[in-house]
Image 1: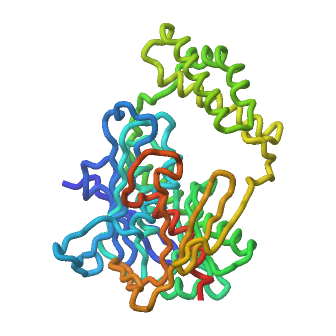
Image 2: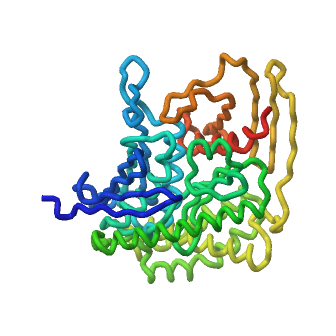
Image 3: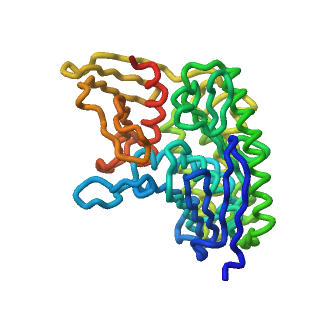
Length: 416
């Protein structure tokens, strides 16, 4: 009845991890259940049969679901129903996304979703590393084209020793919280928070973690050899060689002139003129291929900018490789605010405010962790007007939540 049902086991950080495939979510392209102790995470990967019309980027969606039943809780609120993803769940989704996204083939425009769901959580064994490991396994055993596998670990430093996937008590005592992902050959993602450790300790933690990642990759390769599906042959989007050569011959010198100015606005205007001229020239030669022509221009421009930087040591705005944009700062700009300041570098500008509240104003968290309160909150917002876009205000997106968490992680250890 379940002839494809298999269970594979390995050891990560001194604890047994089992991977179950072929029993649940059998209609997904790839699915697995990852267990360590009483922590259980299910990861499913699916891909649409056809590319999405008009898509010019890879539509990958990664979601990490925290289910309150996994820790024996009923969701709060009037409806008592699971709601929108918490900030922590969004941050974990981004952690899963970063190492897997670069390994999909260029030109793949089919929708791909990776969903990791917590089914049971032991507070002492974090589900996040299991979700990251499971995402690699689900993609590796699926027929979705992907150049994995990857491995993922959390590295801590406790009593001067490196620890893989530390327990709750070890996390509290650790000088480092390093999220690390990579292939057997290279590191793909590093995210860390630390208590002022030195460079040597950080490099050592990365090397230590990569050894565990190599073991995970070998483990996944064994799973793929036994139950993996053949990868699907895809008709990937590409720029025809003859079109690319023709665009290069026509537009190369024009782009040289367009890029030969340090004024950003003038440079963009010149590039726009080259694009219009090129599209008009090839309208009859390559009808209905405006997208390919624009993409060819983009890659030619990218090559020229890179060559100028690497060969001449000059960036598009005229700066050398070690030169930064002009910086100016102000503080105390808002009279009735506890703290305020502006930091400006070139055309990038940030206004920050700070409010000191009472103990009763700490943030109460509802999640899978034992931590119930949060005393320091760092919120990042990027309204449309900051980049000259005409769009209204909306709730913070994943990028904004991620950037806020990055700043929060760097400042929280030094706040009294």
